[in-house]
Image 1 (tube, protein in one colour):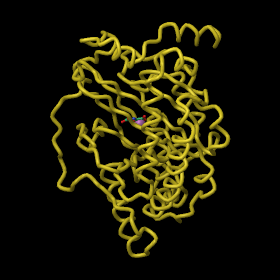
Image 2 (image 1 turned 45 degrees about the vertical axis):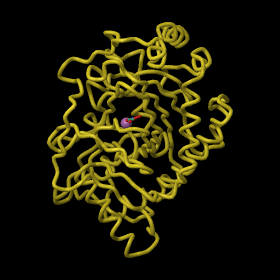
Image 3 (image 1 turned 180 degrees about the horizontal axis):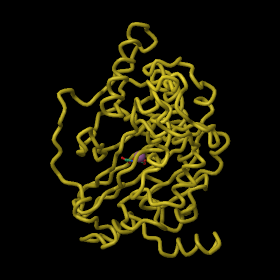
Length: 359
Ligand code: OGA
Ligand code: NI
């Protein structure tokens, strides 16, 4: 099948989660029902002595404060693979305006959103549902629009022109998050014992993919998920959620909720960070649940090194000579990840596992 036929047949079988919500279905279609072992259970025990990490970034320019923050980042990355940040420098108004534009986009008529529909993961802007609706065996209760965002001037003209505030509001937020990720990457590198300016140009000039997600209210939230378990491919992800729903897999392999922190942003480590740190830090496996009474939105900023930049373990963190710190991963680029997800079902096989070097 050529691409043209593929994408048009994809579009004809397309039903968004918003369509189902608007139809007021009282049960979910069979396609969304997970096997019992994969359904979310409602009880989440917090299994740690330590609270889930919330890191206050205020005064991070102050040397002694910065030292303290870097320690907190190191502990959080080792124990959980994510943390939340507060006083991160992004205005509340920029956040609220971005969320408003996101909500207005998903409220647009179906046909208008379908103009941006694609299930080709290489498209710079695409509207879709589930994870990859052309391939998914079980659907998830989510609609999304994803687009590249950095540098903004390369991409913004391809973004939705409706609602009229979309480009400005989402663009402001995207730029603010890009600045925040530059700071966070410096601190994360420092927490690994690397130079804070490690790969500086590649960090500043890397890729930013914004995934704007809409999870409508769901009549049977206990049978399905908003997004299936996965880890993100990039270096770090900065995630904004309007309600709780995000969950992570802890060290005991149990799911725990990431609580909603007012004004906070969630920072998650992705596969590139696990590889770069030679496994000192692990990328966090996460999923999202849905709820019965209200829509949930998230704006997820996925940062990675440039499309063709190969990322392998930092040589400072590898010592092959005396086998103290053997290299544990093969290198990979973002493009290779995209190739993998176009050809594989990531709910069955993790991309990261294909990179591990077994001793
Ligand atoms: C993602 C993701 C979770 C959420 O888009 O990669 O993990 O809460 N989203 O929206
Ligand atoms: Ni994710």
